[in-house]
Image (cartoon, rainbow, N blue to C red; front, side, top):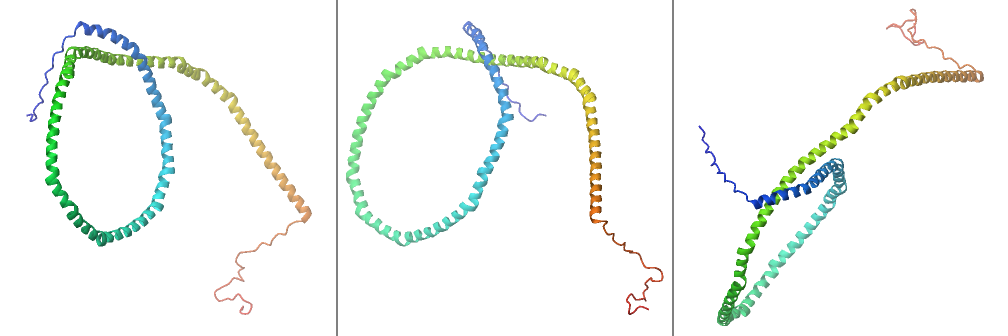
Length: 318
């Protein structure tokens, strides 16, 4: 059982029949709009592709670099300034302001308040009471009389202006709107609607044309440049590279390694010869170096073997 109430179905209104004027306007407008919109749509697609490339290759790295530079050059110094300069200065100013505020509060409570009360009493009895009496008994009656007179004059002038404007402006404007502007507006509305629909249709057609042109150019570029380059690389350059590698580079590398080994052996032999000659010269000039006697680190013979009861000194030796 479905507990939800189905939404009310909307009645489809029948389409109004189109007249000959609408069809006669629609066909040339769509042709002209398609001719004008196709280059615009292709240029728009090219700009979109260029914008995406610039965004990925230039703007994003530049934005990251600017963000890092802004953080290093602005945020870090601002944080340091706030933490080590502005905060201590603000605390000092707040302490000074609290002291000044306390002094002003004492001045207000002990000096200004009593003086203000006294001045208020003087102003009330010397100014306010006489002003109220003057307003109640003199100014108010005179003002009411003047207001009534002005209201009568303004009412008469307003009636004259109302009927004058109605006869000279409103009625001609209504006639102009009803018999001229409304029919012209209906015609312009039909023309504008047809132009809008033609623009939308032309924009969609231009999109398909631009897509087809882009695919054609991509296929043409592929068969003119990519496929020949791939064929040349696979058929010509790869075998030539293998031949060059096997016939030239590998023998050259082997020869270079053999030359290196021979050079290293020659250098080692030369170093050994120089070292031997230097040793011979030193031996002829200074003689043979003394050889240190080898120290026997082994335990003594069996007859001199130490025991727990024997002594090693000459005085206590048995």
